[in-house]
Structures are given as structure tokens and as C-alpha cells.
Image (cartoon, rainbow, N blue to C red; front, side, top):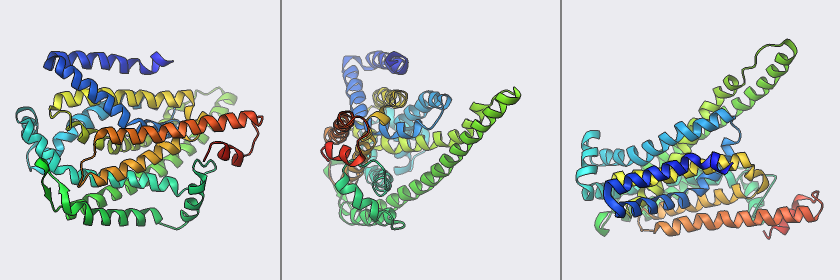
Length: 380
């Protein structure tokens, strides 16, 4: 099972590291290895959240996510995205931007650093909305019950998430945006840029979230119809069409996953410039890391890990909230990537051990203890 799921990740790792040695020697090998580890640590929460969505899709679309999806993730976000940033911020053509990335790496890094406030505002608002919508939803299973119960009651207020997000954006634009960090340690007033980018991130979330919700409902309808047609086929002897039926809605869910993955990639791409400004090494290192995140997502789905460790999804969303705040703070202040990664790992690790304690409490109660006992026994 492990080799089947992570086999391609192992192969890509070997090829990527060998390519790094041929490209820049053992120094490049070390940089690519560090970037890979950084990407995995920063994106573990991404894998957990993706798994929650991917488990609703059939095996065919899980394979598409792992194959076609990884190409989009590696070449789209880890290679094309940094070039697009420079092209837009410096008003350059795509060919000029690529040439700059390959021939004048220092200037390329400066342009990306200067564009960071708008990137952080866009990504921060998108991730913040994911977190807010999660904590304001009334769920049967609660991890931090003392916090989640009152928040679920507040969540009954219409558009509360959007209102809070807009307030956070306004405060961030006035405070962090007015002293945005630029290359060389300088600061500039980019409050307007932060405000516009944040609103764009909010609008993107509302569009993508709305479409994903719509197509998730469509997917459930298709599954019900598929079940009915399977029963009909069993009676009449007609051939089944499971993949076609599941694929209609699953295709749009796949697109949603790609946009979601892109929003998670902002911190990894920006953080990579603290290690190297060589776009080739960046693509190799982040690409290897992205491959492991994809494989981990599929592994979590196939093992049913989210069903066994019910607080993992909570921990991942709290990590998303922390990442959103960190991104907004980095508009003005530099925060080391190790801190970002450790915060996410700590929250997910805490939720994992809480899940283990809950499972032990249920087992001790004979498997039929009520939910309140399980929450108390989890230490939360």
C-alpha cells in the first residue's frame, strides 16, 4: 500500500535530486533537499484538507488528482507562478520574465519580494475564509468544544465570515500595508495594493467556494442516480456507466482542489526565495515536496485516516487559520519559514493525539460512549 501510493513520489525524488547534481553539483543537491522538506512541512495541512474533499471522489478522479493534478501543481504554481508574479509586477512580457529569472536572479528575487504584499493579502484572505467558514459551522464532532460551541452559534448570523474577513483585511491594510516589507529591508506604503489584493482573494474564495458547493451537491445527486442505474442494470442486464456519472461533477471538484492547492502554495513559493533565487532549483525542490503532499492526500483517503482520527481535519483548519494570519503579518514583518511549518505541524500533531485519546476513551466505554465523554476524554 505504501509503495503503491508513494512510489511515484520516490521516483520523482530520485530523478529530481540527480537532476540537481547535474545542474549545480552537491550544493544544488542540498538546496533541493531542503526545499522539498520545507514544502512538505508547510503543506501537511493542505494534504489533510484535500483528503476531506478527495474522499468524496471515485478512484478514477483520485488518480487524475495524483497525475494531472501534480503537473498543474509543479509546473503551474512552482514554476509558472513565480514568473507570472515578476511579469505582472514589473510590466514585463512572459519571455522577458523567464529570461530575467534565468539570467538576473538577484533582480528577479527583488521583484518577487516587492510583489509579496499583494500575494500575501490575496492568499491570506482566501485561507482565512476557509478557516472562518469551518469554525462557524455547527459540527457533530467538536475538538475544542469550549470554543467551537459558541462559534457555531455565532455562525448562524448570515455573512458573518465575510464581515470578519473584511474587518481583518481593513486592519491589515492600514497597519501592515502602510509599512509593507520590500527588498533590501525597506518599507513602502502599499495599503491600497493590499486592500485590492485582499478583496480579490475574498471574491475568488466566494466564487470557488460557491461553485464547489454547487458541484458537491451535483456529485451527490449523480451518486444517487448512479446507484439507481446500477440497480436497474442488475435487473435488465444493461452495462453500467459509473465513471461517466461520477466524472461530471467530480471534474469541477478537481478544479476546486487545484485552486485550493494554489492558495496553499503561496507561502511555499515565497519562502523558497529565502533559500535560493534559482528558479530551476526552486521548481525541483518544491515539485518534489508537492508530489509527496499529493501522495499523502491519497494515502489519507485510502486508509480512512480522517474517519479514524476525527480531529485531524479540525487541526488542519486551525493550521490554515494560523497560516492566514502569518501571511498577513508578513506583509510588514519577515517570519522564518521554520516557524510557519512548526505551527502547522504542532496543531495537527495536537489534533492527532487528541483523536487517539478519544478513540481510547470510546474503546474503554465499549465503543458506545456518548460524544460528550469522548470530547472530555480528549482533554479539550
